[in-house]
Length: 232
Image (cartoon, rainbow, N blue to C red; front, top):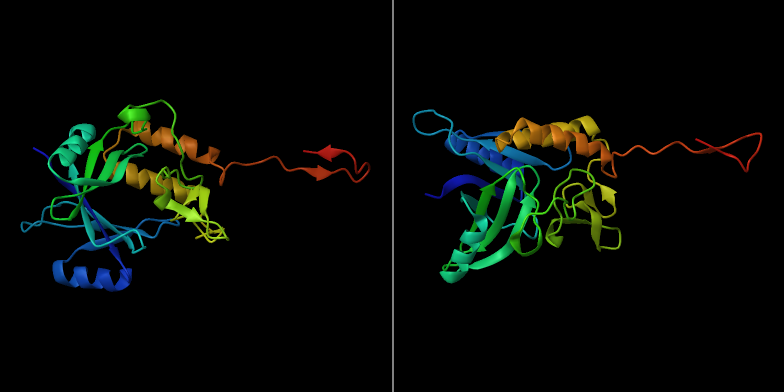
């Protein structure tokens, strides 16, 4: 039977929200290193055992309240059932590389909820199939940005074609000081949280240095003896 596997929440003031939930329920919040400003939430049941985890980020115009994600065996079948039963899909199926596939829906009472199918082959193709190559990923953190609402912004306000909203705003990186090693740690933590195979984590770490933000380019300079000669 499908069951709740994760929840995401947003806050206008994350520090205020963390204080509220820590003092109310004893929840623990751990900030992921890097530019995303995303907190993992640790919860425990009444017997003190680790319970369902969640995440929290600063609220944006696209985030409202809490979204509970339900783990399903087939996200395609679940999407069809949502539609058949009178619900709506507000965010189409989207890949989270190395994690799985997710979609966000509205039930018949206009409540938001998410669907999540775990798979290490989380790359969407046409008509719900899987293909070998990704579509568009953030060139800083590898987050999928096929959904334009996940994209950052350029100086002129247009959506970025290369970076997500967590890494890039108004034509600049949110955290220009973040290092490649810190980004590797972010990816590693996220994949472990999703219980992804170690091979998937290793592949993701290998890919990161090839993204535009981290890819090293040869140093080019002019020869002082011959200004027309380029040196590498």
